[in-house]
Image (cartoon, rainbow, N blue to C red; front, side, top):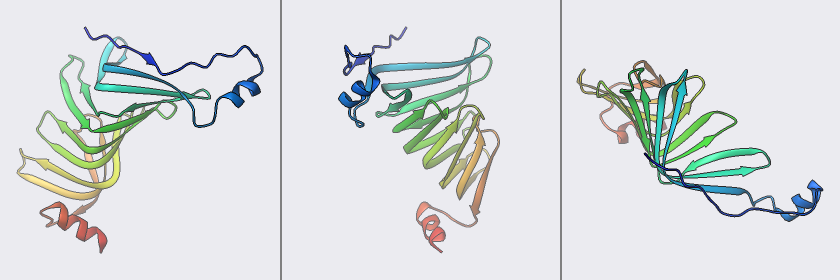
Length: 186
């Protein structure tokens, strides 16, 4: 069992009840933060775990009632079927989850896999938790070994299981990322 340890960076304690006085003490750049290590976050619906997020470090920031989570050392997101088997998974070197938007923005070495061995590579992705969709407006490379196919394009949208997807602008005859970059500049 993993234990989440929260370490507050600091607390602001005031004897005044006047919020204006408290705001004066807290500069706009200062926010409350917590750090957790070896994090496992579970998302469930009707007592069935649907998503598991694993990360070595989670930093939670709160300011004026708004909060967001930062995963500075990367994360792994596993999308599970009702029998708790992984259907697809996403890895990235950095991520931010915005609570209010219910979206996770991942970047740096982003790779999405499914259990058919399909693989998406892109510099950044957005996972919309409510819509259960994953998308990007960046260049993508999709390898599908079962079909013997590799596709390149710009823009991508898929269900979070990565079983159905579309490439917004697909490039035919492209063999590598340099050719894709060159085609995008035209």
